[in-house]
Length: 87
Image 1 (cartoon, rainbow, N blue to C red):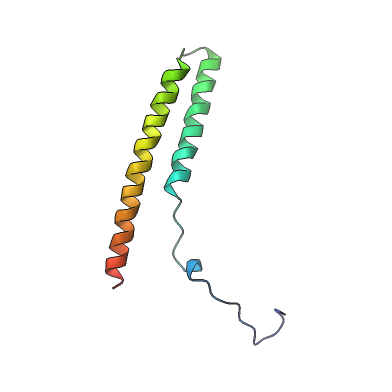
Image 2 (cartoon, helix red, strand yellow):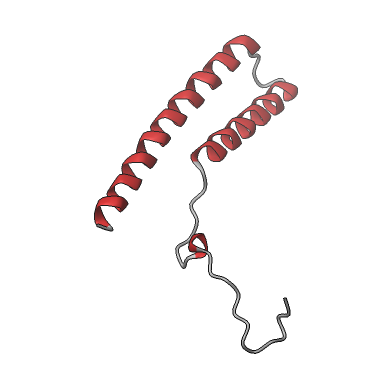
């Protein structure tokens, strides 16, 4: 397959449209968890706060679970609106 051929046109991929790709909800939530944990570790190392690790992990997991569920619901709602608009 030569790309120097003037008659050659690469195949189009439907996922490569003009629309910008949105980040996945799970990636954003887990990224936020890592950032929050890093900030808490930094603040603890400076001695500004003293935290109970168990309570921090429980709070982060509850927050992450809520964020993932809400993000999934919003994503499903958005995709169902797109499906009804494309009919």
